[in-house]
Amino acid sequence: MANKLFDSELKVMDVLWREGDMTAKRISDILKEKIGWNMNTTYTIIKKCIAKNAIQRTEPHFMCHALLSKEDVQAAHTDELIGKLYDGSVDKLFAALLGRNKLTAEQIAELKQIVDDLGEKKK
Image (cartoon, rainbow, N blue to C red):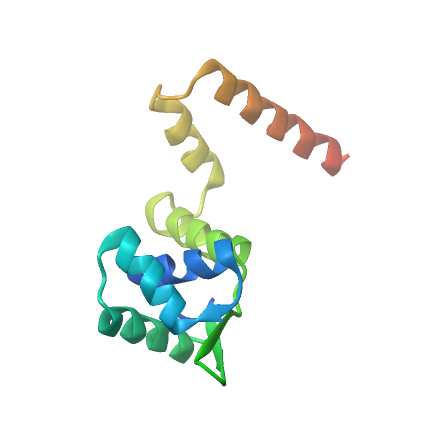
């Protein structure tokens, strides 16, 4: 991802990821109801996403289509987090998450299963 998406841009993208293609007006209506943004704010953020090639605009009616998948954006942001805060080490991130003692037994079991599944794929 060449350009980082900021929190405001992620809010717009999240609407598109959840709801699919829609008009800028509809995105504005959803974000007004959800977080209180006015139409000008939403349109400004949409235009920033278009400039970053995260959203494609088509006519008629200023239709918006997400060009980036949620998974790709999550991966890029995760890579950035690991690089900035954990010296590029996934194990340090994982250790930090586990060390916070805020995981339930069920979440720990799920993580163990994910690790086991990854180990099987590597064989």
